[in-house]
Image: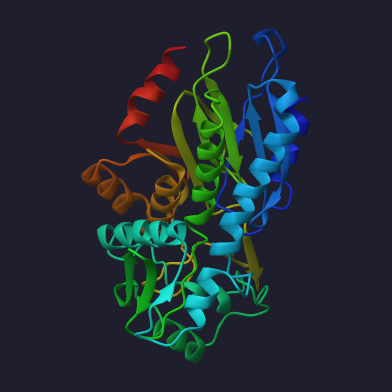
Length: 348
């Protein structure tokens, strides 16, 4: 597969995605080529590359699809019988039984929400809906002040409680959760966990740009991951990183947005103002122990904006690459592991 074809495939139908990463191909001189699996889920595309015998291809394809379907069936607000939809429809103070996976995802989201003072907000669905990025479809006009006030009254992660044994969720006030800022990351993790359980230790999982890499290639070289230049007018590579045994996710403001009267509105909504973010931060990449956390943190930092995001990432030990627009071009700020990774790239 050519690099151009791969890039085109990964950017088709990105809709409400945060993903801005793509794979820097596998050349023919590496040795045995990986098995490749592609498809669509969660409103986006996925690509899985795994070094495994050809005889396992069919079984792996089925297993990958099952892992992703399990996550969709439990987390999607587009699925009326999902755990999330049932919780959203439930009355306050009622425990709603959910899968262990949903309990873990919500617990992780609440933790990031607390650390970031609500920059990551699991109960953001009312705002997502009125801005046209949810199940109700694209908005044709800007929400009225009354609509914003009504939606904001439904926001607040503090009203959500997680129980782990048995797994369940409860809310103390009317709330509707949307796990769009964390569930794709968990989906990538779910596929990675499945592959590890099958004994595979050299693979790459990419789900709408939420990525997990395990091991390297048979020749000993690492996976090469390209971070896209955050420019809606021209695609290009901004940075190339060499990674093994890592999860990396990028959030940005330039792939999913709409315009009204010449004003562009990003899909990333600031839950504290009720409006889409409007600052100079163009994209945020985060490396974390798993894709779920990287997803949540990239969303939170994107909401915070350049200065506050850098402060929070540094304070909390988050490995982040912040790319900011300026009149003179892009300026980057790196924290944690990104400092060394970018230094290594600059030396090559």
